[in-house]
Structure formats: C-alpha cells, structure tokens
Length: 457
Picture: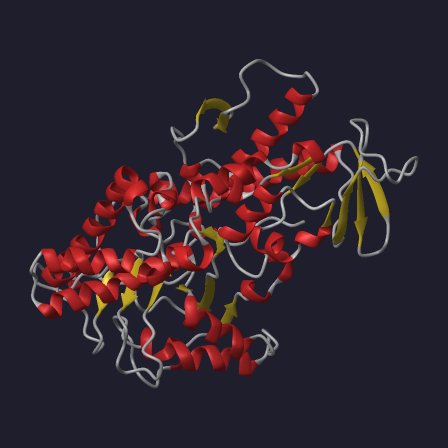
C-alpha cells in the first residue's frame, strides 16, 4: 500500500490546525503502524487471536514507542479515520484478517493520487461505463426495476422435482414472472445475500451459507456540500516553512470537543480535481454512529427542500467553518446544495457499502476463516448452477473495490465457458486481471475502495 506523500490538513480536538511538524509526525506514525499491521497480519495471521482488533494493535505499538501521552492520544484519534476505508469502526477491524484489506496501492489513498491519475479516473471511468452498457444493451435482454424473489434449481416446467444434471434454474421476480436459465450469476451485494438466503431453493451449501454469515458488510456514507465558491483554496502567500499544512485535497477533524457528538470527520476537496471536473464541493466520508446519525436526520426529508439543506449545513458548519478564508456571516460561505447517501437503508445496496473483516469471539461463534470464506463465495454453487460475482468474491488484492467486482465477473464468465468446454486450459484456480490471467494475489491495477455500493440483484 502506498503512503500519501502529503499529509492531510489536520484539526485537533480544540479545532486548531496542526503545524507542519505536528501534522507530519502524527501522519507518519499513523501510516507507519498501518504498514506494521499489514506486515504482521500477512506473516502471522495464523497465530493472531481472532478477537484482536486493529485498534488494539495501535495501542500496543504506541506504548512500545514510548511516546508522550498527548501524541499517543492524537494518533489514536487519527486512527479512527481507518473506518472510512472499511465502512466500520477500527475497534471492530480484525488484525488477524487485516491482510484482506490490503488492496492494490492506488485504491486507498485518494489524496495521494497524482493529478494526472485523478483526471484519468474521473474522465475515463465514464467512457468505460458507456462501453460496457453499449455492449450489454445491444446483446442482452436487460430488465431494470425488477426484483428477484426466488432462485430455484431443478424446478423446470417439464419436471418440478427433477434434480438431475439437465435441470435448469428458475428465477422468479416480485411481479411473479418466471424465467428459466442454464446458469445464473448472482451479483447481489453481500449485505443482500445475508438477509435473503431463503431466496435459494434448495438452500445453498452449508459452507457457502457460513461464508455469507461470517463476512461482515460495511456501512460507509457520504455527504456532498456544494458552495457558491471554493473559499477554502489556499493561496501561495499561505505557504511558509512553519505554517500549518494546507492540503489542497484532503482535511481531517479529530474528535472535536466543540461539537455536540464529538465525531471525527474527513473530507475531500472536489474543487482540487483537474479541469473540467473541479467544482466547489466538499465530500465528507463517515461510518459507524456518525453515519447512522446522518441517515437518521435526513432519510425522511426531501433532498430538494430547504430543511434538508439546513439540517446538513447545521451539522457540518462547525467543521467547514474552520477551513482557511472562512468569514462568518458571509452567505457565500455556506452550502447552496447538499446530498447525503443512505446506503445502509437501501435494500438494493445490501443495506451498506462493501465487505469488511471484523473481529469475532471464538467462544461465541467458534473459529472462523475469513480468507477461506471468500474462497467459498468465489467458488459459488456450480452444482446448483448458481455462481456469485461482486466485490465480495474478488481476488484478495481487490476486495471491496469496483475493480475487484469487475475481475470477479470476468472470472465467473470464464469458469462457465470452461464448464461448457469453451476456452483454453488452466482457467481454474487463477484470477482475471487487466484482461489476462495471473495467479491469485499478484494482481496490479487500480481499486477504488471508497466508491460506493455493490451491484444489483
């Protein structure tokens, strides 16, 4: 994993922007311990207790470094931001399976991306989507706004009880329409699968059900605030050797004492995207109790209403009002539009964002093998002609990413072709990467983990 070259602007608990030295020290300690955690998890996973969290590892390492208590506290506060990568709190992040969170380098660090890479992603991603949909709509019968309620293997119109090798898969929708298929690929989000195991008839194999139960599903949310102008952009005159770090892309607020709930937040400045993508918008990331709170105060409101805008403005104003150049009572420095995601209450998003890997108690659930669970999901239930694709079935290096979801679909497609005797040798046991085949774990590419939710049913 690449460590960002420029630390974010960091505001401490009192709302003070840290100096360059303070910010750099805090930032390097945080990422240094993250790197140590990845190395430890990769090398010693078998011996790490499954109930030891990443937060516990942070506390151990900070004590070993014998740092002053205020610095330890600041780094621990900063460590909470890891939750915005996984969509869950750091005290629930498994250290044993932390290696499963180590995606391809560029996938984690938006604020570390060179401007050329950001421009490529923001412009070319739409072109990729356009090409995908062009081929799909031209060659497939795409049914939108159609929910699947039943996937039944062996129930054909000719023989409802047949379970022989010639059986097909019958898919029933909420409109009570049925269609038969030779093979079915489910790209439903993991969160949806967790709540809908009864959709499959006969039930999925026990090993596959266990995998779906064991792997956790994150609940990342985002809030976009658009302003009349990007007042926070620094000028060259702000840059002096001893001045606080002003990161043009990324800012973090550590557990603030000046807000009601003391929740830390972080945001990306979309104003710093390359032309023509730049616009005066702050993009806030959140997880855990903060994400639950934001969805609870906005879900019943009309996003186009003034009360919706006022609700989000009131909540985030204690944060953005600390940004450079803010002037109180200047109406050009308050948002004119706002939008909050609500994925954790969205059925088609699986009531969340993407998979993550949490601690568990051996006494309560027994021994778990989350890496083997991913492999079980990846294998699917081909004996029932049901296959699975999506970020939760991708190579380890791309779990939770759009890239991983794409690779998993390519992999399943090749496996189905192979089952029908189509394609070359050696497809099994390998992963599809950038259009080619490589051994699992050696993938390279871009995985944008914070992107959003899983695919539809």
